[in-house]
Image (cartoon, rainbow, N blue to C red; front, side, top):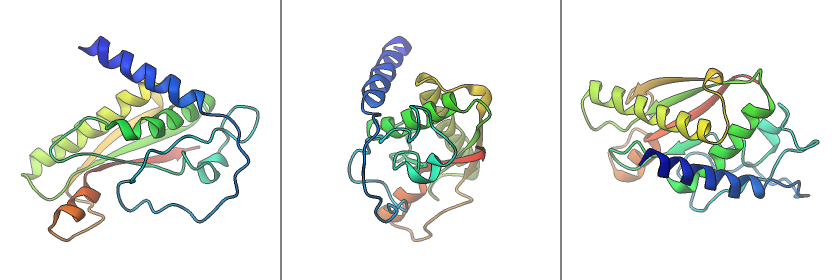
Length: 173
């Protein structure tokens, strides 16, 4: 089963990286990163020489997306986030000195210990997906905040879906 999962991740990476060509696109307002995206995000690719630079973290539409959302009580990376994972993996490959922290979060439901464990499993899942796309484990750390750092505090599904996430935080660019 792990071999099949690895093959699926590798195939998704190939497809995502095949779309990583330089495109001349006018920059619009930054996307709303407060909730799960409604459509797949396609990587736009590095701006210089085929390799990402630190400036691309703010200018590349794919790299600006630094939140991976999860379904209720799940720790598997959803297919719509594979392109984002592939972009960040390529950034790590292009920038060996870069380092990221994967911050796992949950909604308020469940015990404190369960949510800390779930947040860690979610962070580990994003790390595994990035590794599957060529990123190095030595460039990533996982931390779980469980339910302690909500972005929304209402008790409804729309709000809870915003809290079930892993945030990608670059600690060295």
